[in-house]
Length: 102
Image (cartoon, rainbow, N blue to C red; front, side, top):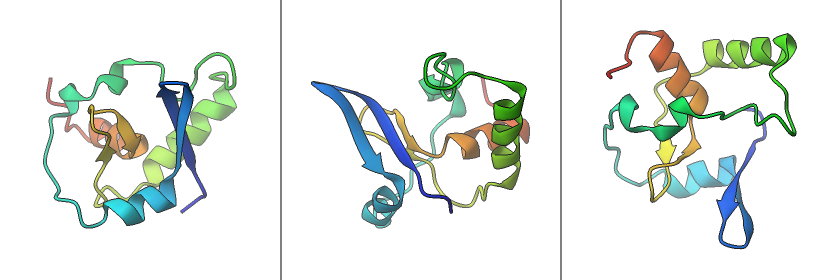
């Protein structure tokens, strides 16, 4: 797995985490099924915020390749308020495979 960090807005700036560490720390947590429709990020600008990264054809193809290569047997990790902490490419893969339920 490629080295990844994730950020989202926090109380005084951005909250950040190393995805490898997040996976280790969450390994023993219970797995609960949620509806894809309940994940707000699927209707948001997620990978391309228009500032740091633009949705060029090259970047879209890179993400398409990552989506095609994911292992959907790993659970998506959601934060305490339902935000995706790890797994958006797996969510996109499930949507492409027809598991979109809204």
